Every structure is written in C-alpha cells, then in structure tokens.
Image 1 (cartoon, rainbow, N blue to C red):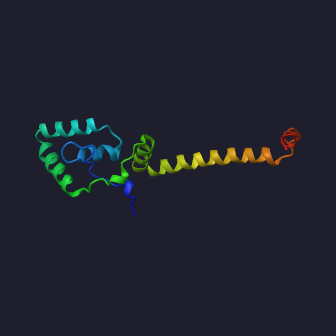
Image 2 (tube, rainbow, N blue to C red):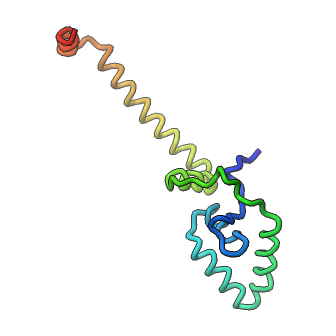
Amino acid sequence: MNSPRTQLYRDKQNGKIMGVCSGIADYTGVNVFWIRLGLIVSILTGVLGVIALPLYILMGLLLNKKPAHMYSADPKETAYWQGVRQNPKRTAREIRAKMKDVDRRLASVESFYVSSNPRLNAEIERLR
C-alpha cells in the first residue's frame, strides 16, 4: 500500500500546461526548469519527440491532480517526502539515527537528575 505522499501526481498549481513536469519535479526533487528543458529538447530533437510528446499527453490524462492538502509551505517537509520517495531505506536510517540521538540525550539528562548530586540537591533545597 502506497502512501498518498509517495505517489506521482500532476501539480496543476505550479504547472504551466498540464502540470506533468512540475509533478515530476516535485516527485523527484529535481528543479522543474530542468525537467521542462529536457522535455522541450527531447521534443525538438525529433526521434525522442515521437515518444516524449505522446507520453506527456498520456501522463497528463492518466495522472491524478495533486490533492490540495499536500501543498506544503514548509520546504523541509517537501524535502523530507522527496527523500522518502527517492530512498525510503536511507530515510528510515536517518530517522532512526535522530531518534537514537534524542534517546541518548534524554538518558544523559535523566541520569543527571536521578544520580545523587549534592550541588543539585542544594540548589533544589534553596529554591524551596
């Protein structure tokens, strides 16, 4: 089962004609300028244009529009989901590493407060 955030959509809000290039750019994380330039060059070269233009039209007709709730103003969230689409295992490793780091820091704070620390005890008593 795929998450809606890991699917390819047409991005009509940022698109020029059908939103296919901007959808591919959003999906892959590549700048939309390069996707559009690649499409234009492939259409103008002739041989690839025979495949590129019908493929573009077919994708424009078959791909779903990107749902409105998936447009994020936060570039970090957009980059995160692009990373998930590009390499889910790497993203899971990064999250696991961040959680281990948080767990390690929390354990050090907990050991500081739980251990017998006369200076800390004196400070707490002074505050009472």
